[in-house]
Structure formats: C-alpha cells, structure tokens
Amino acid sequence: MKKKNDFDLELFIELALCTGARLEGILNIKKKDLSLSSQSVNITDFKTKNSDKKRYTGFLSDEALNLINKVYNTLSPNDFLINKPYATIKNVVQPLLNKLFNQGLANDDFANRVVIHTLRHTFASHLAIKGTPILTIKKLMNHSDINHTLRYAKLAPDSGKDMVKKLYN
Image (cartoon, rainbow, N blue to C red):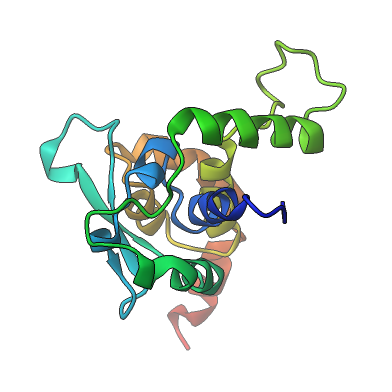
C-alpha cells in the first residue's frame, strides 16, 4: 500500500487498528477532534442510539501520530483527517483484503471472510490477548452492552492466575 495516492488508505487502516472505530467514525474525524498532546481522538459513534455515548475517546498509536503529523499543519479545524469518501475507502480496502485474506473462500463464507469491520474485531482481540481488562475493552470499543465485549474474553491470557498468586504475597 505504498502507491502515491495511498496515504489516506494507510491512515484509515492505522486508525482502524489503533482505535477500533467503525469506518464511518474514522471518516468523520476532523482536525479539531485530535489532541496530539494526549495522543487521543474524539470519535463519533454513528451506530449508538444513546446520545450520552455518541462521542468517545480513542487513542493514537505512534504510527498513527506519525501519519497525522504529515498532514496536520495543512488542515483547518473543520477539515476531515481523511479526505476520501466512504465508497472510495470501501471500494479500495475491501478488494485489498480479499486479495490478502479471502482467496479461495466461498462468497457466502461470512464466518471466515475478512472485511473492513474485521479491523475493529482485530483491535479488540489484540487488547484481550494482551490482558486488557474486559471493561476497558468495552470502553475503548464504545460498546453499550458488556455482552458485545464478552466475546473477546476467551482470548484473554490466564488472567486470574496472576491475580491469585499476588493475593496473599
């Protein structure tokens, strides 16, 4: 993904993997939503019906910050960080995912097919694998219901073992 015009696509994928935000949430990030000093971004959750949870905070990886810094000073506060429409991102990223991960899969194999939303699941899965508490994952994913987050609990390392060993020491 190192062609001349792929900057927005690279930034999109990096933001998806470091914030877990949905496609629409990432595409609606404006310069004014960024805080470089706290390495965070305010994200709009277009799926939630709860007005209290419509906006939430995501955190930026060093790689995302490096990419953002390349364009930050060229943007006005209300400019979108990624200057590509939904359809363009979807029509470029999905074929790339198909080429990399979906070769040989039946078109109706939804259980194994990698799609753009898989990047969100990858973010949550990596958090769980690293031992992040399930309530923290819930917060970072902006899930309204813990049951949505619990699917990732099975990926957590044997987290209770270390807690028990520390209990009386």
